[in-house]
Amino acid sequence: MRNVLIIGAGRSASSLIHYLLEKSNEQQLHITIGDLSLELAQRKTAQHPNATAIQLDIHNTAQRQSVIAKADIVISMLPAHMHIEIAKDCIQFKKHMVTASYISDAMQALDAEAKANHLIFMNEIGLDPGIDHMSAMKVIDEIRDKGGKMLLFESFCGGLVAPESDNNLWNYKFTWAPRNVVLAGQGGAAKFIQEGKYKYIPYNRLFRRTEFLHVEGYGKFEAYANRDSLKYRSVYGLDDVLTLYRGTIRRVGYSRAWNVFVQLGMTDDSYYMENSENMSYRDYVNSFLPYHPTDSVEIKMRLQLGIEQDDVIWDKLLELDLFNGKKKIGLPNATPAQILEHILNEKWALAPEDKDMIVMYHKFGYSLNGKEVQIDSKMVCIGDDQTYTAMAKTVGLPVAMATLQILNGKITTPGVQLPIRKEVYEPILAELEDYGVIFKETTLPYLGYNPDKIAVE
Image 1 (tube, rainbow, N blue to C red):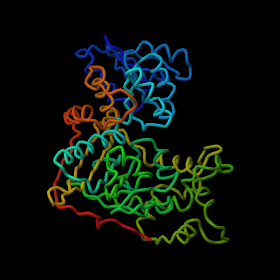
Image 2: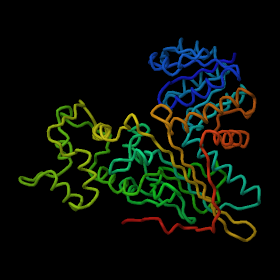
Image 3: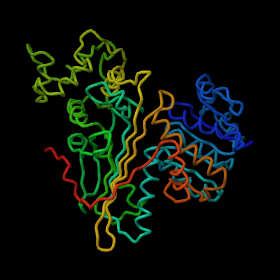
Image 4: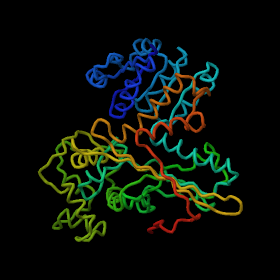
């Protein structure tokens, strides 16, 4: 039996573990699942004879190195900043490694050692990053193989609530880490290139500069720019491309309403609010508004932000119970962003019967034989239930498939890498179709600059 070690048994690991257990007899695999919570790890084994659950504290160096030394390949499903010690152990004990996380500078620094030891450190092999890389490179390579020249690449992805579970005014629920949603877009201006011109959107304007998208059968969406669209320009071989833009998908109207929180300062995570534990929801909102001897919190907020009483944004704010003067926050020494996350969690948590949805949308513009052409590639994936969500499926399945491909000698290029080579993306994209992750491509005349762009100034 070949031993696969999975470190981290959280929500995104469900489909990954299920896939490997289903393949375990045929592929001669034993799956060791390590998590700080033994109960969680045991639950994920589903009492399968080819699985072992262990309590694992990755800060316990001796224990961590002991289990890594016994593995044939290591999968880390921990947060990105926790990968590096595991990666160093994998080099010491000569083990391949797979993660779904972005390649950090610290991980990239291990590239030479990984190559010297003929080790594959596959990263960014989840959803976004992951399926976005693979599905994009497939089409880009096909265009290049025909002799085409890339003119435009736009890529969008979003974790959303499925239509049948969409029952709030925001058309949104948390399907992934709520903290990441609250802090989205912070840490510098969004950067991209459009029609050969560099463009920058500062955080305070980010949610008022969106692009409309239409997906057949699912209606209209909007997307706001990701932080740095330019970092994959060289990786994708798109140094000469005229337009390169990556964005996050939401339902239309979400961004305009979210901008209220940004403008008030509720998404700030840089300071702690005094007496936050005893603060009511109403007190929290009022703390960002000017003092007035007679005006109510509601009136002050509408005046401050220019929100009319019949604006749907106002209804969205009321739906969150933001002006409740009795409900206590109960979080000591909390930042504004932590308090906002706490309030939203109550309203935006997926109910037990809810399903989530992943939407991915790529646009490719290129010239070939004197003609300019555009390909739109769209993928929608609906979750099965609260365990096998669309997010868990699209993050975990590519990780699992890459793991098997490495174990079976199908992926052979050593080093710290992301899945942009044909040896990686071709078999994984083909197999993902068996699990409902299917891209539908449409060819149309090249549109160039998209007239659906909104630029609200």
